[in-house]
Image (cartoon, rainbow, N blue to C red):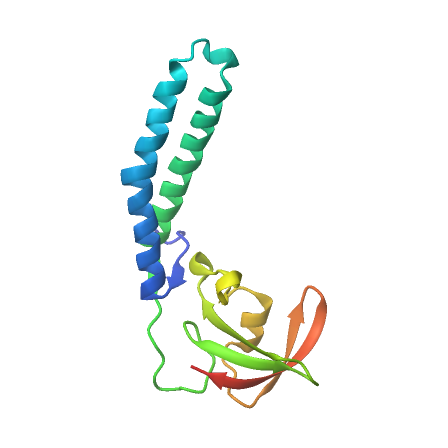
Length: 159
């Protein structure tokens, strides 16, 4: 591996999900797009053929995504579970905290940027919240820098 290639920390499940997406793009989506290009070519003059242009754009997107996924998978670093420190926030763990003084409980799993999905409660280890919480313990109060300003949280659970 070249020294300047970015590494992508991720869970085993996250890597499998990327591998499944890559497989789908290579075996299904790529063929669909090629077929769309063939059909669009049949519509005649390519200079004014919006179906052809759209299919070519989609092909470029699919090929770029395939390259991105291959790079991420090739440079994946699987996060091993930290069983030594069960109450310490680390990559791959879920952390539950409450915003002080009287906020509601929130739970997030801290993952590598490659598998972050805030809608599924998975936040990147590069995010402001994760950066503030990593290495902290259950019971600690932590000041988190967010785009909306500072917030004080108390860690209530780590799994």
